[in-house]
Image 1 (spheres, one colour):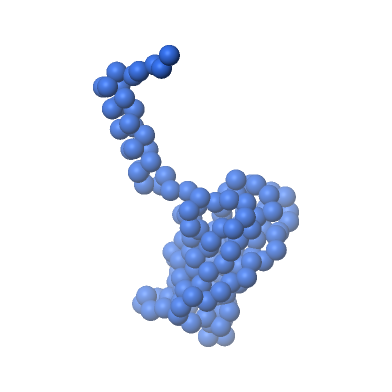
Image 2 (spheres, rainbow, N blue to C red):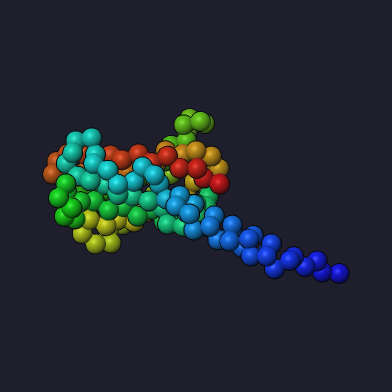
Length: 137
């Protein structure tokens, strides 16, 4: 026997679910640390994961610009993974260039937990880094 909710209660529940699903900050997989000037101030890095984080196959998008917002062609972009709570890393993902200033890495975590993802950008003979803290499921 199916149980029916009164229409009014069903509408309230649906409204609450939609509000939670659409509220700012509810999107998983993006990094709150993304989009800032690096320590040297040479470039601005924006980075974030697409969609919900998984253990394997996470797409990390990296955008490199100068301080005026013009895309920068880096001589090298690399990503390293470190799990501070366990004192170990994971294999470094390959980074591919998609367009001037745009790079993509497929990140695989070796286990669930908190990871530090360090993005290093080499340009004009200097290195800049951006660290993201992410929670792998």
